Length: 140
Image 1 (tube, rainbow, N blue to C red):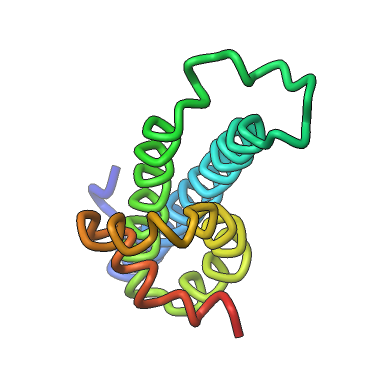
Image 2 (cartoon, rainbow, N blue to C red):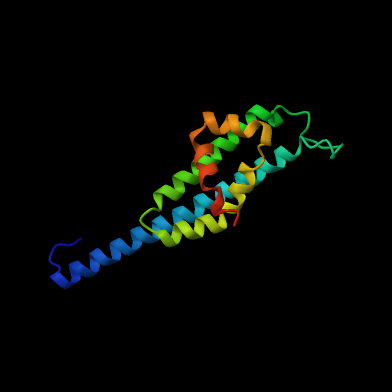
């Protein structure tokens, strides 16, 4: 495709290629964060199923609401969030946007752990430990 192109045309071709790669990266970040947000919202719905105030909750009898499974799934989503933040290290504006847009969902999810269990989970989980160290970003 580049045979016979002038240096200026090659430069334009490279610029267009880089622009398309950047667009694809931004699109992937947007799609991934949207999917992660939906998964977190579904998990929060299942967490509320353990609320005894809601007497007729359809999910209560399911194995999906076992607290140990919920905590493990929370850890997966926290890790996914931090992986996304780390991948955007070169783009501080995107990190800021992700923290603002997706971080509120993630922080709400992470704070679902009761105070009695909090210290133990932070001790055994690196991702919860990182959240615990950075939680002031979410609660100003």
